[in-house]
Length: 172
Image (cartoon, rainbow, N blue to C red; front, side, top):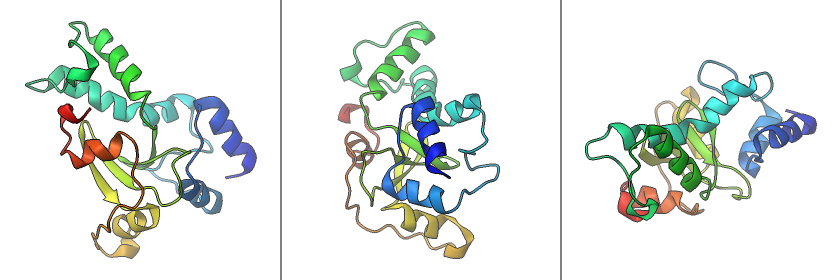
């Protein structure tokens, strides 16, 4: 991607890629069914990718038994639209997770180089790589199925605590 394309993403969606993600996309723009198309994807398509983590939290609040709802967020609203509003408001205080591939995410800038990669499926969120290079080595065919996780060096506010508490609503 070019500097102008990175600036366009920032203007349209209000975030910058962290240094590792930026470097990847400046070098090669992966394309395919499970890769966000940061160059040619529609705003609706890219917004859907960016909102998928919040949508997963909303789904678990409305469909899990018991509902996933942190006490720190107050009383669980009755109306689904109020649940969505609260989830979006609360997660807006956390570092934004930016999709890499499928349901794998890395935090946006100002998260530094070496930031971890998360796998996020609703509120089931785990580390999936200590950094972007390790994640790509593990996930893509050239890693030949290697699934190693090095110690996490860069901690991400809110997200690291949530993952390390086994996705407990009490950790929020």
